[in-house]
Amino acid sequence: MPGETLNGRQLHQDHMTFAGIGAVTAYGWGREALWDGLLSGKSAASVQPGYGPGRDGDAWVALVPDGGDPAVSSSRYGRAMHESAREAITDALARGWQPGRTVGLLHAIVLGDVANWRDFYLVDQGHRRSREYLPLIPSTPISVLMQEFGFHGPAMNVSATCSSANVALITAQLWLDAGIADDVVCVATDMSGTPDMVEHFTGIGAAVTDTEPLDGCRPFQEGSRGFCFGEASVAFVLSRNVRRPYAAVLGGGMTNDGYHVVSVDPTHERIFECARLALDNAGVAAEDVRYLNAHGSGTRQCDMAEQDLMAGVFADRPNVYALKPLAGHCQGASAGVEVAAAALGYERGIVPAAPIVAPAHPRLLDGPQPLERGITAKLSLGMGGNNSVVLLGPVD
Image 1: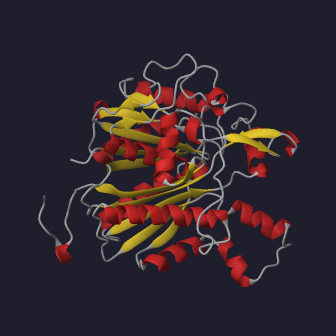
Image 2: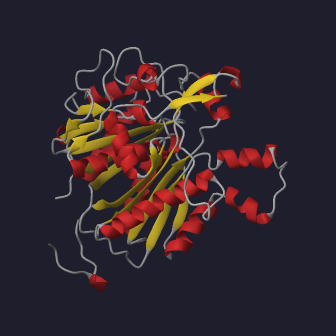
Image 3: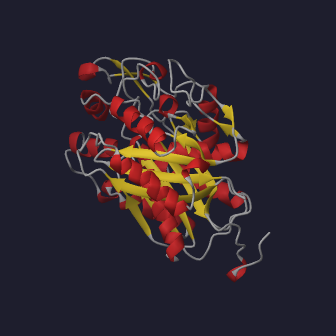
């Protein structure tokens, strides 16, 4: 074990590592509920009344069940954010994390507390007591969490559409490298699975609600139509100083297509560039990547882009898997769910892939598989051309 550093903190790794993990998903409250749900091979979605066409029919949606600490927030969004972070911090401490002097917080969000804002306008007519109004402000959940744990490092929200969780991880790496923070708590929260949000994503042809997700969402398989809408809040404690980390963050890259507010640039040039930037940042060769943890939205343009990336940058060498058929597309928290699954998989020796249900890409994994030691590239493609890749690996 490496020697002691300043203030008795033990330097465990050159790379930023996952010291703790917390999760609130449609599978339930807690990371073990997520893990067990993924290994079951069954979708977290269920039929929700009032989510179908015209909002008078049924639809498949992966919603987080109610829960959490009511003393923290009256909002399901606030409770989910806080509980996932609490679980990650408790987990990290149990695994030997010793918080440094400066612990920062990054919260990856897109739309914020959608249901609460809707009620503010439609139920309360824009009038509330100040105490009930403040939870609407995106800084409030961050402040409540910082107060509970006595953290005093930098704290801010990060927003890059469906790439937000990946971008938060890359930002955390930048903070640690620059000495801005000794450790970072990174949370990605998206609880926007309301009927009005689902209606619009269905209307633009991205979300599929009229069939069970494993039937409608088939990334890298024939007949895929789109994704099932989902919700989640996932948290990580990121540190170089922990006795038993899950996995390491080797590096990452970000680009923007600069092409369209929804559509992917058909040349895929910026997605290729993003992957190459991540490889360079991590000091990793493309042939060393064993797994592609795909964005896997199941839409036609996403499938085309990711298969092109597999062939053009990785020469179709890595095994590929996608988790949105199981956990749903959790929007700004989607990469958080998928990174958590990969990090847990490194410790537990399993790749929690979804089952194949139709003719598929030859490198697509069929259900949970034993993990072969190697590097995972986690790709996220967000609306507005927000591309991101994070490279994960085992802890030496």
